[in-house]
Image 1 (cartoon, rainbow, N blue to C red):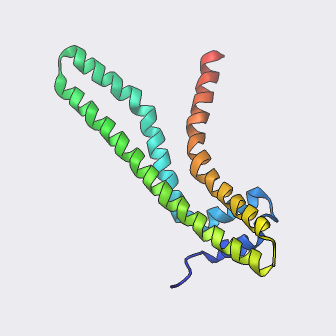
Image 2: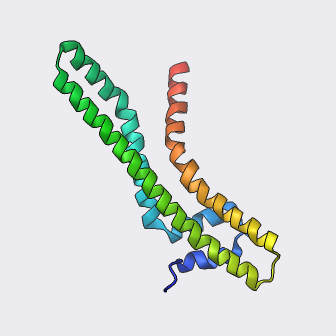
Image 3: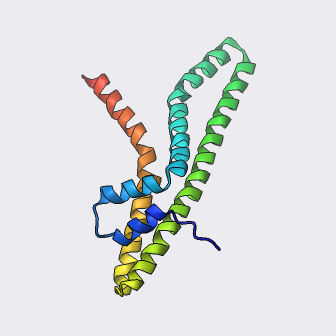
Length: 158
């Protein structure tokens, strides 16, 4: 079975724990540009849809007040579309970041064994690898909504 780990990541895994966090994050981004851009594109789409959610809710309320139930059904379809995009994003996230972690952890373990490091040191570096992948998976998708909320608070309260 051929190796699936990109050469950039293989080289960087030798340095994991010996370089800065920003260098490791950049190496992960360089090794998986397509997967990360696809995942982050779905994150952006989901965030845009969440921003549009109140607009569609307003349209639905207006149509119900007018007695136009057909427009309310359109709102239900839009909400279903939001849920489908969110579910697709989470499924793609899980697959993408599990693959990245597996591709990063195996070379780290092998390199640690070749360098005759202790098991606890190797385990600690694998946990560090997981933390880098978790940053992309859990924290990056939350940044745009936080920026939006903080800028909205600044506009509102000043």
